[in-house]
Image (cartoon, rainbow, N blue to C red):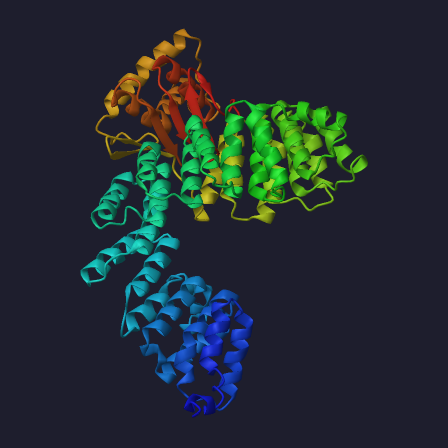
Length: 610
């Protein structure tokens, strides 16, 4: 009986260096892969091992943040000829996208002044331009880099050029550009991309679908988000959570709760982002029943240490104003509170102006429960004192804190000084903030406003002139609203809108109706040395008022009004919007720099605190 020749075959050869490096990198053993690569370079390995292992080595440098080594591998790729390989070149693109700082050294820039004339994507563009062969991955890497750097027009231009050069955008391309329209609230152009998605068969893709849902939600078009969601054949947890978060942030409370129930019915398990999106909704409903159930789920699921969920719980309990009652029940039930519980309680004391209780709970943290107060707890107590007008006590408390106070803690007191018109203390507090953050625009603006509110117009003018000389510029107030698929932008006191005269006429009609119901303009936020009547005219030009009234006169009765603003809504505009929501019988949603407001029947979801 003959024996097969295979039985006499020699032992298999050991895996090559390149193979071992690639396997280690693929399995996430990045340091091991780098170690293997360096050992290979020190050995007599074949020259062909370098091109075969460079993409994996660059991937590891990117993951580990090894900028210097990655840059040296760039030089090796050029010397060895491996740069001609598109996989190596793509790995270099990704490396410079993720670790852009190193281009300062690799391109010979020696000072930050020189760096100011360049961008963090210079090295990426250089690699891309020098590539001998490109593929869709190459284009996508550059598009994503531009999008993440906020270079929106460049990113969109690259997509067009990519198409002209014969490379068909894929799901990654679309998922990279759609967030641009979400950030800019440019729903019209977002819809154009949506049309491209449908025409080219990407409308069933989960990642593209999630990006479309987020884009429409950020543009206040949850109706379109819902359509995208229902048209997708399969819905993974990412889609469910995108839809839920979009509904919650736009104030579609019942829709958000309905999505959550359907999630559970279909067997999708909630994750941290689900809870941090849904918990604040329970506070908006002023009903804690579901909120308490979610809190219990947080504890059972071990999510207590998640900072976003903790913040959501605090926000929910503070909105409901039941935080103190719940805390007392906890104590009676011998349930030990934690640091999150105390932050919710102290924040509730701040909102309700309960100074004595605030001190009581703050002291009990360490005296009774052995919990060391954190910077957040100290900030909440300082805010309580400041809101109640106990400015000197707040100043002494912050000055004697065991934890070094940050600019944000001092800023709570500065805002209180503005409210209570204490200019001398505001100067002292602003000095503290400017020592910590010399270019803090907010502290300069608040101090200037304090001067103005106190009638110290010369000091206010000098401070604003100093800001201009330092190149510090406050963002102009701007609001925008979409009507009939067209975005309308209103800047404060800008008369350029073609409907401006009609808007002012309608606003005057509302003003007369509001006056009959007891409305008195609040001119506290007008920081100019002018007559009271002029201040009232200034208030009429605020951007959110213009946007809201335009929305009402340009849409059918009953249409919901959705407005976004880049700054905080002023006191008078908040009051006026409550009146208008009742007079016009409209629901009005306003998202400002601080929070989300839902106006209905003369009330606001924020409870007049923002």
